[in-house]
Image (tube, rainbow, N blue to C red; front, side, top):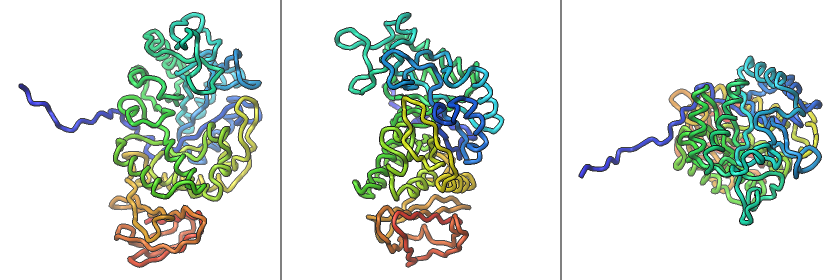
Amino acid sequence: MQAQSIEPQNLYSIKQPSWSSHSVIYQVNTRQFSASGSFSGVTEQLERIKALGADILWLMPIHPIGEKNKKGKLGSPYAVKDYLSINPEFGNEEDFRTLIKKAHELSLKVIIDWVPNHSAWDNPLVESNPQWYAKDYKGDFRPSPWWDWSDIIEFDYSQVGLRKYMISAMKYWVETFDIDGFRCDVAGYVPNDFWQQARTALDAVKPVFMLAEWENRDLHEKAFNMTYAWSWNETLHELAHGKCTLDRLRKYYSWNERSWPLNAYRMTFVSNHDKNAWDGTQREQFGDALEACIALSVIGEGMPLIHNGQEAGETKRLTFFERDPIEWQEHAIGTLYRKLISLKQSKAVLGNGEYGARMIQVPNSDMDRIFSFVRHNEKEKVFVVINFSNDHVEVAFEEPLFEGEYTHWANNESRVFSAGSVSKIAPWQFEIWVR
């Protein structure tokens, strides 16, 4: 009897492209992004997005929207009527090509939202291939169970024909318009073996970047570069409102380090289209903790997301089913993002996934309120201290990892941290020290 091999195996074969080492992703809701609500309105602002520090442009669904059972006047972009066409609300194919071309000239990658779990009720596939759709106990088409998604009906991925169609449709956008990948809606509702099949087919056209709207490490094995850090966002939200202890955040980073592969990107965010529309603006969600949470999203482990309008203060909840253009203005949050991203992209240790350094906890004298860590290598060290409370705190640090001479990230103040050093930290204040 042959002995079974018990050598370690690496199941996670996705290789992160070098261009993504310090990338930041920026989400665009084309309908609300500009006064025109068009691709041209996005193209006109690509230089500004690039100057913010973004590298990946994520466009919410660009396809025609179903009319049958639609919500609101314009319907949800996630109720896709035709996977092979462009929503005329946004322009035409040439307008889309112009956007892609300009983005590529600025070294921006472009990924489009893909909605594989369900379609609009009036998608032509309903008539041509009804067997591709899931049915309820009565044998009728059904929305995703337990959700109020009455404007869509769900696919059945046991159907081989559906898989072939969906992969062909995804390849069409890569081959025809030279997009760089996909953000995949409700990715966990679609079988992982399909995603692996799709990834293989797409990479045969060109290497793509794949983002899953889901939080599951197995999606990283052969399909996705990045998944949502939903639990990170939920933890920060509860911390901001005093609904959990700081140990819950530590548990997230323990889980991230021990349970997830190093090369898996986690997308960290304080806002996105769902959070903004249904839970509130960034300030409504995080209050006085907002700036500290933004800082951790950029400087901690994970790839930061900027939801369009955050940099302008995200002054309102954008209406999801109607036109509601963003109110653009210069704002302190935009300045904060630019400065933090500039720091991130200037330090090797602040890279994404395996390109950066792990966060290592620095124990301190007030662990209930102060979160402190370093990211370092032989040449660089970044020391971060965040007060996750409404209190003024004096804190000392333990173990020698934090010790050394640093420069403050924002005001160039020099300081030597040594055993016994005490810092006075204001409520919800964050400090970043670099050497």
